[in-house]
Length: 256
Image 1 (tube, rainbow, N blue to C red):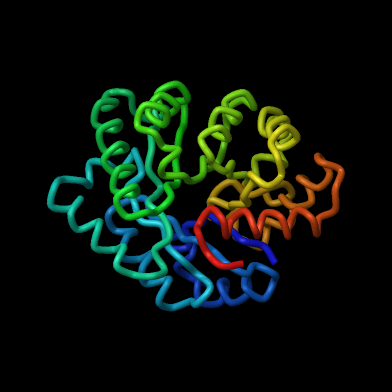
Image 2: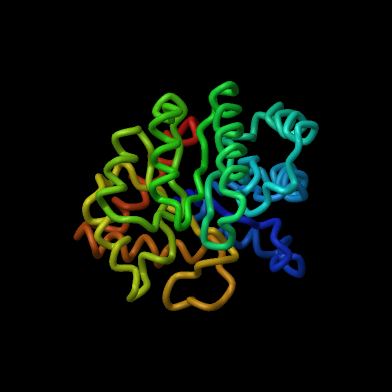
């Protein structure tokens, strides 16, 4: 069975066939999915998915591109979503300097606030970091993220940086990019990082692996990611599935 640790099935791209697709995903060997919220609206839509589908769980948080959604009242309301036993993590949270560098102070502030909320709740964090390697790592070290734990979603940096996060007890999220010809850094990381620190993710509907690149992604495409990791590490696909399943359960503090 495969554990998709990061998906966005509440995205509008799934509106026409979500009720058909998710049961099909389950039948194709996907045992668990964590739907990860990103903006204020997605908190409620993610919660609804966890109510509609027994194998779907939730991470609640506000993406750095969407921090304009946050204020003190909403931050207090965010915490109420964690009263549900299917709320596994705080995320996705972090820093994104690709789209916007004018609000770095605000991004860092809300990243820290949400990470500290996770520490208070005893939940891991799902970190989004794009074009912000140094600042993300500084935050992780100075705010002692080793006491929180979590995953670096859609890891895109060097294997040297990956080792820094391993030292903090974090997992490395690997998805469709590992199958791309221009995914050299991620391929190197996958070969270098211990297998017991890798988790699978789609970021669906985005980042479809080859041969689906450019189309809508869903959890069934993780079979291609499994195949690629197995080839890179010269092990069986079964070993990749079994180990990453256990890893995801450790990440999200669930029973196997």
